[in-house]
Image (tube, rainbow, N blue to C red; front, side):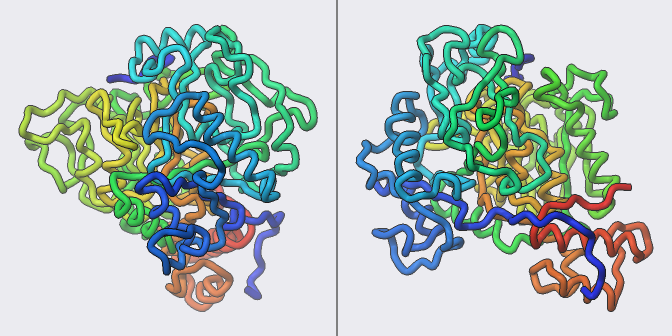
Length: 529
């Protein structure tokens, strides 16, 4: 189903120090009454923070904060879907009270939701409208499309987005889209103050009709919506607890090899040029507040220009149809598709929207099973242009014959950005910030993923450990799995060509200096050429 058209003593470079996202700035949310919820929380945060489980677990990040919804005096939420009223009464307001009582309101910058907690908020007028693109488009264009992902709605935890909602267009800020103030950011979330996070923001209309797109940028003073006024909400979810544990493990000490990692950028029926002319391409639609051009081509061009990753492994495809669809070697699709054999680090594809005619059973359906076909590098990210690729959690099941982020994670993936209801092409996540800030830069996964999202209070979810960061083997000169000043000393002793231009020189040293400084206290993108 196509998306709707609306559908060392070496001199270090000078930089302003900004602390990276830290474990103590993360709040893990779980409910011990939900079967798979506590085991995931306990594995991530440790038994000391999550009592009553298996016990004896040190935790992947024992420094995080944790809260058990079962202790907050509210009924348990059902898996999968929830109503807006249940979201407010059983999740949003209890979390507000907990953050206030513990003094964590402005200290926490990221919230982690554990497997079993619902991921979809139903529309107040038509519970399942987000699963029906034509009806969803009608409601969206009327400014009354208020279904959302639980995660995206929690980003603006302290805003009463549903206030005034009575079934009309634009009668509440939950209708339509809220522009993400952190979109395309290149600084850590801690670079923005959270002092005003509890202040009600002033939202204005960006597009007609009322309720289509809201902006908080025009508010004055504390009433202006800034990146510091949001939480980066991530989810640890998957087909099974074992799948979730495995994806968490793959995100730790995340060392990526730029000489072998493959970037899949599989577009369809494109002119292959990063221009504004081809607005019919799925990665290049919507008003300028939401879209900035050809995302797939821009991502390709950035990676090639940077030169740290091999150009031969940046697999951009502009052609549509079964014969040109990029797949992996682990599944045979009747000889169809172009097989990518190397370890994939970014799987960006139009997926089932790639002009695919589904294979005839019993051959696996290429449009839905392609994530299971690839071999993945540790740290692999999934970002497909498919309306329902984040639907199948909590037992809801897939839709439209589209691929699922849950299958990608089960097949060896580590991170994903996905859609839980019909998102329309306007709001699909961008690949450029993920490539720039995560694979080339020093931002955490949560920061890079939210920089890739044009909108909040809408339909996207971010899957994976928010604290994860990439270390490139080419910059880990001493091979100890960390990136620090020792690598600069090691490079000085034995210079190494980091950008594949055939010489080891000052440009390579600047790349390393920038990466080391970025890993220690700030995000600084690699040098531009």
